[in-house]
Amino acid sequence: MTQSDTPAKPASRTPPEIWAAARDDYLAGDSAPVVAERHGLSLRSFQRRAGIEGWRRADISVPSPRDAPIWGRGLTKAQLIELHPELADIEEVRADEVFQLLFEPTAVELRRFAFRRAAELAATDSPRQALLWMRLVQMLDRPGDRIDEEAAAFTPVDHLRAAFLRRIGEDFDPPEPASAPPPIE
Image 1 (tube, rainbow, N blue to C red):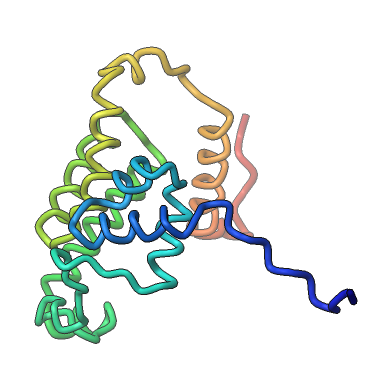
Image 2: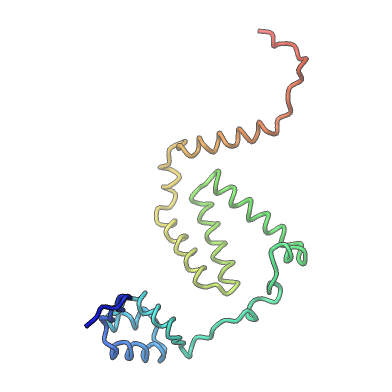
């Protein structure tokens, strides 16, 4: 018996019969988490195997690029804004919201922002992402306004933001004239 230069591929600990039953259940319409739990498989292993072997459920259609909205197919953001100038206003408002959340965050504004994002994503047929944003909304509803009430007046990050904004303001201040007399005390 000789040793090969390549290590042997480790055998799967799960018998082929289990994989066959899991595949059949999945192809019959059960969800991946349900099938994985039923057959004692990790969800990640099941999803990996389903992807490698090309298992496709009959009740789920694979989206094609043609399913994208007609106004957004194959276009960059700049091209979309050129075609639809009103999108520039939407983008500007979104940038202002993000800036507001970054420099003056409040729980109420974060909840509103998350809810709007969830609504946008639900309206554009992205239910999974919409669900993630709605989870954030629910998590922010739990503490209510206590987040804003319990927060310290200024955190270290607030001081960094203030220094950043001060430095930006100094960049835009006009230089003082060199011939100005010294201030009288």
